[in-house]
Length: 404
Image 1 (cartoon, rainbow, N blue to C red):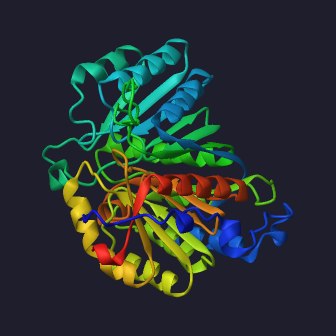
Image 2 (image 1 turned 135 degrees about the vertical axis):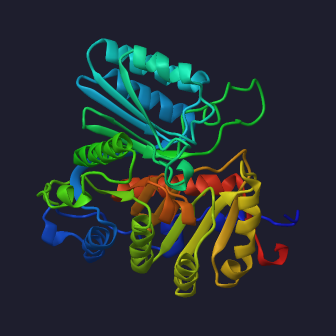
């Protein structure tokens, strides 16, 4: 990448009020009839196109990077009274993985039901004795789709989801694996070495939806097939009305060839009036995503992408850069993260609608793997997400047309 690519701090750091002179107002009433038309359109869109219903009455909080996220997750596990379910693509046998292993075994030994689901390829370097220690400690462990004599030799699909749910009450999702990439030993000097990532903590009815999502993957793994209790059985149950206040949250379950997350993002892109800000680690968009982003930018929407400059899969960044000229010509602004690795999977639209989860903008994320994202309507969370994004831009460089 040419050295003359630069960031423009004065424009990158403009907040939402500075850019527009106004701020979207929060929902003034808990009466569903008083919800904004765009909120109702998004709720209807994710229901019809992404098979996810929105629930109200949730409390949500963004979590920044591994140290904060892991401390919060460990605290939630230690508070468990009845059950803990944990699903992760990557579980390393390092200090982070051992910390979670010890905590899970500790709560299991005092009678809490603990289940853990990991991916066969994502955690392929973790030795069998690590899982055996968990099982001896009363943790029920299943491994999804090991390589072997099965469809596609077990190479695809992958369980790329990351979630933790405690007592069907508190849930976490985001881009984190359980490894030292996200929380390395603290250096005595110099910048932090951990991967940049984001998670969300959800306290409320949406945590039950996350628990049901785990149950479906648990069943798939037991059957060694793609079959699972139909999602429609859950969607057809009456849910809490959108009159309970709090954040509105929809849990979108990405499944092979269903394209639910992609359609959910398209709903947000179509309804965006002011801004679409996206952070993603492995950016290989289809023509549909490219046209959605460029169309929004040409229509006056402030479209920004935050991508890695360094990547654990360098070929992905090289391929992503092939899309830069078209995006830049259409008015999309692109930054590359200046730290070790940008691994977050987030979107914030109009400073209000936030997506946090496991899905990257590429064919594997949208159409091949099992993924899980939370789409959240909450003005306070949206403001936090925008502030986090702008802070990340301060540690990134903007790519300009002359440099590509």
